[in-house]
Length: 329
Image (cartoon, rainbow, N blue to C red; front, side, top):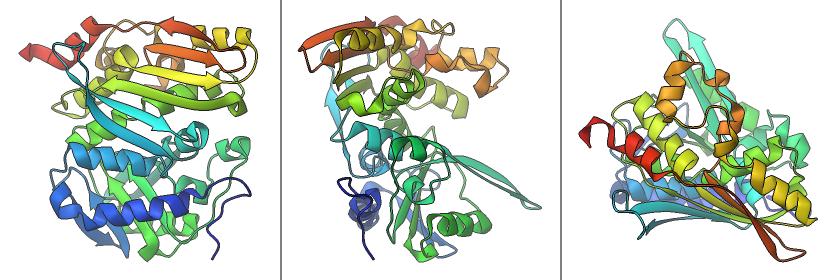
């Protein structure tokens, strides 16, 4: 079976298959659990097995479909939160929007209970359940599918079987990686979405995606939260108050300058409080939050045609302290 997606564009399935195989092969040293459901491989990154920072780093690269590089590095400017997650992609639009974005809604309900998670990763491009793929003009084919689920529970058998069918692969060729929000691996792979969050807002603002030539992002590594809400708050705040993204774009300077101005989280009406507080204020209705909030704190947009760079937003270390330290100082 051919593993090419479209002429001139890489196959996310082909690029991600060896990364998934290596993750499974290294499960013991990465402290990951490996199980089977309906024939599919389930990788436990923080439910019954502890996982860790390196597991999260590798899962983040897998989530980008093999088109991204994620590193953990020191931030010498910060006294309190001295490490950060850096992300770069050779094809940021495809890696971030075509793979890493959590855009596939997965749910199942029966007498045994209910399950819900948003699927991200290269398997999305096989199933193509989202209109976004028509806008990207991208379709993939392959005999192996990988999805990453931000979940603290294992998906039920009927849902696993349906995912395999939607991806048009045998269940034995499906890998589902589970990373709870409050786990170490979950923390890393969520913060590693700093570039993806920027690309998603670029798309929402109507800036031409084919003008985005390259991109790089960085955000501080927060301590995991005690529970889901605190963990979700801290990982979001790492991006909203501490994230920096630089995009390299083609086209006129005025478009680049306008993008730099409108892209940061600082333009949102909901900016100014830790995310957990914003979430509580809207009675935990995620969709009641201003969508313009979901963006890095600071952006640099470089216009390749002129060589000029434009800046927007700012970092807010005091908000990181408020979010990350909690009551423990």
